Length: 526
Image (cartoon, rainbow, N blue to C red; front, side):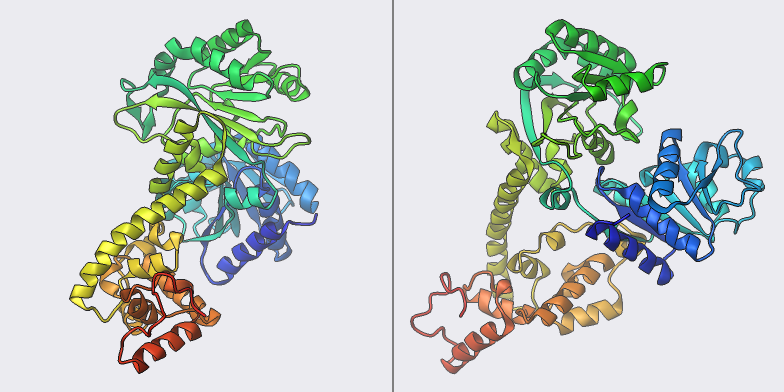
């Protein structure tokens, strides 16, 4: 099986992390980008080295999917560690295991602690739980790969408490841009849903309260869906089975062909197949279909299970991001949720670099009244946020001039080179959160950056990496940026080193005054 470029890069990066002695690493791929194929190829590499590999997951469907893809991609067959099935005595080098089975002391005790050389955790955002940790601690010498769809910063902080690095990340905008996933258009439905009385449980909304809060609005929601999506193939996510069943009835009364599936559905496979074939155009479920189920022809997602957890939101939306013949985009319906205490996930959070941009995007989508392409909205929102930051920076620069620092403020450097990833950076892994090392501080000062404004080792590392790359590319240094931007020149961070040097030499030769005929605000460099 021929891997796509990003899949091969991911495979190489994972092996590289383990070769460097980093034992616990992460792979982040959006839903629909072939994470199972990637880790199947990683497994193949490890088996060729004579290793034994465990694939760990919390649901039977994920284990079956992993075993099936592994055999198709590599020819490797698996033993199973689940309920009455045991892998002990099997000559297969790969085991797919249920965490609920393996976490039991009696079951774990049958395995030596070095039995597995490598462990793959599918849907790795679950792995912080006690059940996973019990299994991982037992096989503590194994290399570990966690695989997950795009997590939010909160998830990354949690995952960073266990994993030591992010081996590879492929983002949703990259996947859409490169033609591997469907473009997403978001539409805010002008229907105010009051969630102010809904309580919180385990960091998210309590599902039982959500069901009651949604009930009064179900008829109106169905009417709005008829106006904007009656010809689409839709998956609806709801908080409770009874709410899902009630909404299915309402949708059918409105004229849709709707069906419902839940954990107790005896004919679940048949319902899903009928939906796939087009017998129904709406499938309602109570959070059953967030993982391990695919129907590429879905071109509309309705999230009626509001959440603060981006990984959960991404998984719901991910049911509709796959490409399909005749499908031009995924329509994502958002609602005007009214809540006093909680910041909810909106379509913007799927691609926004930070909360500032997400808020600006959400406002644009809400005010538009028509479906908007998420990538285009993100571009304009990011530009607005940068403009606001530049305004604030201009004030800061005036203050800096008065203080006559010899070193460049990191924020000035970031804004000048327009490095959104640096200005929006939040540390995730344990080592990143500590203060910059003495060596980092010395190197930053030497290169012209004020280290006092950098409060963690991760940010220091990112800036130093960026400075190294800029030197290789022949771009301006922090000191050149400070000198010229103090004199009113714009975005000097995008100039070449030589261009900046020539101008500084001219200014020096003119008694440190700007030569006649040069307007700093309009000067673009030679």
